[in-house]
Length: 319
Image (cartoon, rainbow, N blue to C red):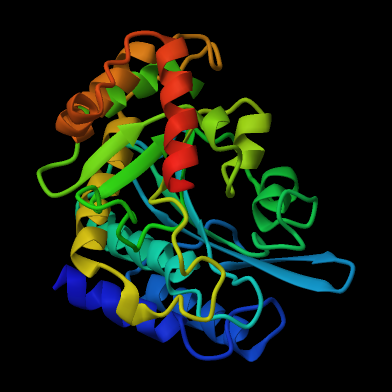
């Protein structure tokens, strides 16, 4: 059921013409996401409804936010997010219809069995260039202008539908942001994904702010960013629904659900980026790719070892 629903949502969103802000596909995507949230019985985040508009020059931006109410509604919510626009008139199946579909399925599960606190589901507009890392980015406008209160933690997904293009390691997913709060190390330890998906925890500075977690990081809020990295179809006309791995997406859905539930019961009290995460990063590497590290003669023990290994992997695989 999960894989079928994920595929159906991706195929509906990744229609020809793309989801460039202001295009017919963009409007259709907004309607699809809002319709799905209404079907799930999700209350809107704001009194005005799911759509939170903003103007930025010629851009008519529309963030979409709904809530899966938790058991303790007085607590600051966890926010989970994915952008829904595309980089030009491209299908954008992996970037970022896959993550939108994962969030919608996760929302269904949290409506059926609530988390400890509210989970806000945010579908951000205008993540792609020319808005990327500018003041017109939907997540930035949400944080500055539309947010109604504090956010306990932000969990952001981008490029989560494809196999990692490394033979034998296709089922990897990369997670940054554990360094943003010591409580997130406990979250990671309690939610190692089940067999079939392998999570590698790494520093955000190794890859940079690739998506909507940027505004939370620069404002020193706890965050996690999940991605399968870039692949040959990134920002290309070939980023189509038939190229995605829906079984892997179902596993990522289960992982995201676990992360959200655990984050909802975990105290996040800082200090921001106050702890060394070398130990848990190495533990995640051993769990995910231990035999590969042994084959390559890599046995990281220090931050310098991890720095050198990341440099090597980027050179070899372009991740």
